[in-house]
Image (cartoon, rainbow, N blue to C red; front, side):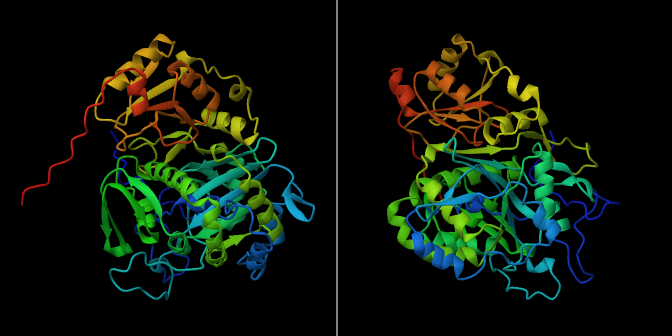
Length: 487
């Protein structure tokens, strides 16, 4: 099978050689990047998910400096001006009046990527250039805020997705920002996702991410396995132990950048979603509001966006009233390219039929009749059963119950979920909440979550928790702690 540990490979740099060459420098003195970089998609909703109640204080902080780091040309701005006004004032408070689609791009540029940049000392974590947004977009997400359905939908687009970029050709989607800035990125994403209108954009530099986490006091995250990786040439040092722990800014970046496993960037997208869930549970609380002015000062120095202050206030007010369960996280469905398929370059090949379905269900895009009329009966759903406890009795029982209920494609997950769960989770891997809820009815319990952290080949992943053992009178065996190694 094609190894995906080195999943991220160089992209095209010009129309005559797209998809085949390393990233060329923009000047003769520039050096090509040797390692691709990515940061957590936590910042996807950060500007909007700061909670309500900030009022005039927020407006003061944000208006003290314009968001936009550079002005868009008329042609660039026109890409985002197709849908008209987003807000209106109700009792003097900016309010969201219609669905809004925002493109989020996360960029990072190393000192090695730019000419005459000051090289940081050996051993310094992330030799990066601050306040630069012109590199590859190593994180790319579309966020839809929909006041009519009271939902927020997030679509993670893998950076190695193979697409057709105007003026470049077929290559990885993360090259669009490098080749033509945010407007070309928006144009490309819109085309790939069924010509969905892009209302606004946010570009975020990774340099401020660690500072934000530190300002909030860190985030408690379960690290599923030991993560260790070192790349001296790029000043990349990852060293995290397995288990539940509070991650500061530095360690959070390490957690989100680690990709040295079989799923490569796809696994990293899944960790981003898990991190964001943890952030929502811990930080979006009233007691966190006092920290927001400091956080906002960090955000505005590391952001480039065409959102106005009024629009940010409207988004903050909307999300402050949102049930957190209505934040749905998706990943553009697809598959890894096969060895030798595209001159041995690795891509994420988008599945247009399944992508159409996601866009129809969660983003209001009707691209084909097939997306509306697909058969979601139990016999057609791929259901993965994933243990969170180190004993198979629970998953065997769940498989039997679902098989009797007409689910013909039930299979064990490749790996056990390493964190023991008190409550069974039903992961709508491809965003189909209705089918996940129907499956929950067949099981009789479980919490439905819309995100893409489940088994990659499944439509729904069932993570067996302690409640399933208790409901079915299955004895839970004590979990043996690992013995310390002899020295």
